[in-house]
Length: 287
Image 1 (cartoon, one colour):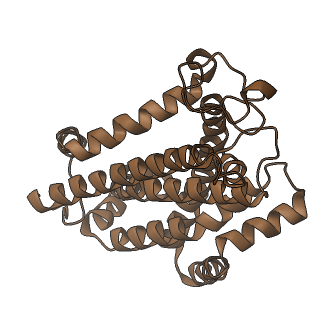
Image 2: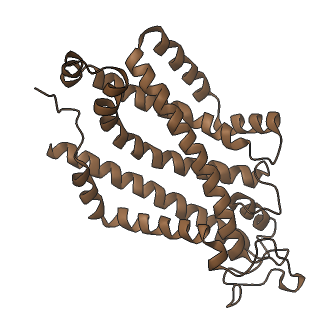
Image 3: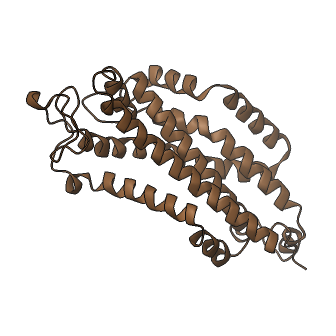
């Protein structure tokens, strides 16, 4: 008889729980609004992110420039939208790369075990011992400044957490009776992974994915603030905070508005992850 002790709630069950969670749905709505506005930036704003006007320097928020203008007279609302494109693309790509590689490596470690598992996990421990910021700076030094190569270093820095999570889940699953039953029926290799392992580890991986994505947004913004990330005149959220910070006493809104957008985006992603985790945990208790 199939062991359901590790089985997660059905898709309908946890999705219905999520749709009934006010905090989760509100966070999802906020995040989608931010993403849609950034993607559709040319339709949302009529100003180019690099269009300068000396007469509009440090203009306060008004009807024409709802977020005001920066020290070069560039529309801050446009720069936030186009900067969001850059930040979300870099953070999203780094997270997807880390998740994809972690899924493959974690499943391999959990299924194969033995010396392979030992060597790979020791390598993950070495990577996780290096601070993400230091790893990104090192990669940027080696690959060239301002070329966006730090995105791959961000993925490498996030890889160990995915590998550990997935490997732990697979190791628990491999000892279950339904895995032994599947093997007795001749299910091997990729078929075993797709039919029995992935359905059990994907939900928890998606929850971890939201937290990792929020961390990557912050890391990317820190890179921009330190001047290591995207080079001007391109817009990026962390770079906008840095540009505004230099004049924060004179015009505080040029730094506070981009910082608020970063905080709002990260908070919404974390709330989505918390809501998903609560829905999955609630489903497991009902089971």
